[in-house]
Length: 304
Image (cartoon, rainbow, N blue to C red; front, side, top):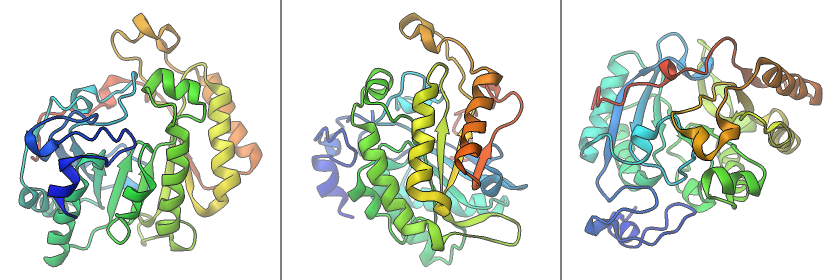
C-alpha cells in the first residue's frame, strides 16, 4: 500500500474525513500517520478458540474511528494513550509475542494503520512467521478496506453492534453502521468463512470468522435483529459470540441514562435462548460476572 497516497487524504474508514494525516493532522480516528500502540501482551479473555490456554498475542492500537459512547477502552480509543513505534518494531513485537507462547497475533482496532500493519506482516512472513493473524475490529469498516486484507488475515473477529440506525446514530454517531457492517462482514466471510474455516489439534481457530455482539441494556429487539440477520445470512459459515460484558463507564448516565446499568441475567438468558431457538449452533456465550472494569487491561505500553 502507498502510505503517502492513502494518508494524504485519508478515506480508510467510512467516515472518509479526508484529513492529511501526513502533516500531523488527526482524523476521525484521533490519530495522525504515526503508528501508535498501547499494549502488546498475552490476552486470556477472548473466545476459547482464540485465547486457548496460552493466550492470544494482543496488540492494542491507539485510536478508533467509531467512538461509541459506552467504549470500555476509552484510554486508547481517543488516541491519547500509547507509544509511537516503527513498522519494524511492530514486526518484532509479533515475534516477541510468539516467543511468549501466543496462539496468534490479535490486531485490536488496527483499521487506521492498515498500510503499516500490512507492511509489518509482510516483514514477518519474509522472516518465516507462521502464527495466524486475527483482525479484531468494530465492524465499521469499508468493504474495499477489508478486501485489501485478503491473504494477510486468517481470522476475522468483528463486532456487529447495532442493526438500528437510530441506536447507532445515538450511541456512535454512525447511522450507516449496519450498512457497512453487513458489507464488510460479507467480505470477511468470503475470505475466511464457511469451507475456509478450520482449527488446529488444540482447538485454536486457524481460519474463520467470529462475529461478536455486545448486548446493551434495554436493546433486546435490536440484539435479536442482529442475531437473526447473522444466522439467516451465514448459518454455520460463521461463529456468533454473544457477550454480556457491558460495563457502565463513569459518567455514562449523565447523557445516556438508559445505559447506566449492567445487563441483567434475565436479559442475557433471553437473548441466548432466542439464538438457540432459531437454530444457532456455532456460537459462544459468556458465563459469570464479566461486566467489570477489572476485565479491561491496563494500557500502560506493556510489551511496546
